[in-house]
Image: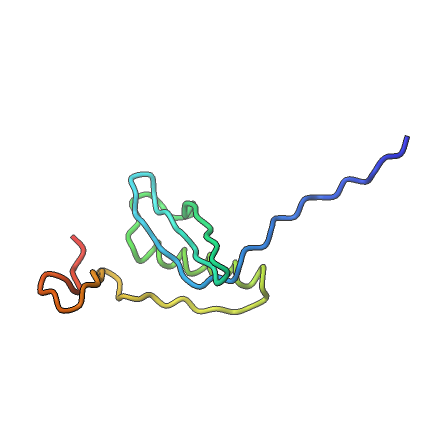
Length: 104
């Protein structure tokens, strides 16, 4: 009988990160990493406590995205947040009700 040596399955490489979205939920902080190829990697920021603020979640997401870019693409990346933390942009130019708004 011929046997074949088992190979460890490698984790498929993700695309180069181009954006990240954070969402606070009752179960903890969630993330979606958007890639240049159009893919998306979603999950929970496991190392961030449930009651952590946005600054802690952003720091963890920055480290995660930098790690993905380095591990899979041997690239150094810097994460910048736009719009500024604590604001959201409702894009409807010219309408008086829409524009930068403070999150409640």
